[in-house]
Length: 147
Figure (cartoon, rainbow, N blue to C red):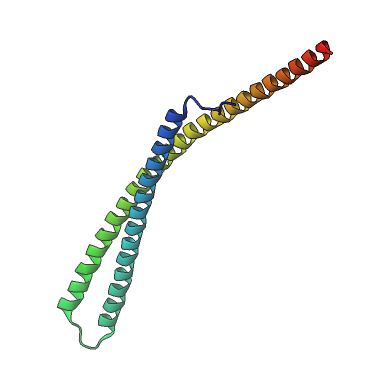
């Protein structure tokens, strides 16, 4: 018996490679997003520390105006950094969503070919089985006709 061979195996392999490539790209973007989220957390922590330090400065008996101004300016810089980082995160999420759509589309293309291969393989073995049954029937008929 000749083994089943899927005629579109090359196309299926190419689509599987494309799917894997898309998955790797999405994973890289997700890693970048995680790094950016961690950076935002660092900015938020710095804002909290700066606010606590400013509060401590206000509670001291001796009021150091240059130090308060330095903390205020640093706080304003942190607010700008936070807003920029949130925009970067939003853009990265949009890119990740597009990549995830590409992954889903590539996955669908692979699944379509896999289903086609399964159906063709099933039909191949059904035909083979039918031919085998016919051959057995022919042998049986020939035996009874001789005897």
